[in-house]
Image (cartoon, rainbow, N blue to C red; front, side, top):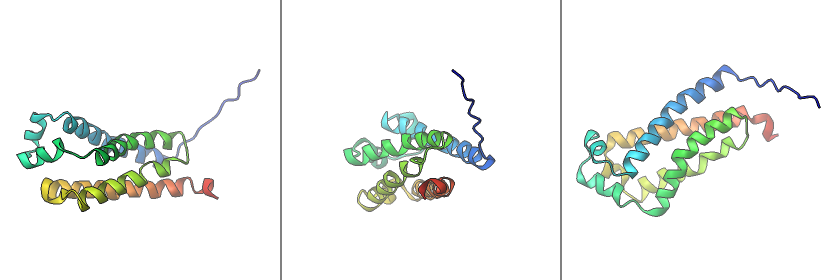
Length: 144
């Protein structure tokens, strides 16, 4: 039996984007773990008042599930991108859009966590949508 060596080549922009988003999603995973564990020191460091702490301690189940999918789906998306799997395009598109739509639209997120944290969330949404667009064009040959 002969073994075929597969020479996988990565473009510089793919590796750069994966590295940048790995850093950003790493921060998101850390934030998720600290928030879900209700780490009081972390909340104090972020200067969250009791209203914000109550918001996260009483987070509804369905948005919590999408939040979990969103946070860990980001890391999975990056791995899928490195494996050059077309499904990477779909991994975050729905959970991110749905999560931000419901939390800002129905859970009063902007007023509860404040403008600064909300702006960061919206910026991450825009960057993640940009990642989805990048994936679309990166795997464009596969969609034809």
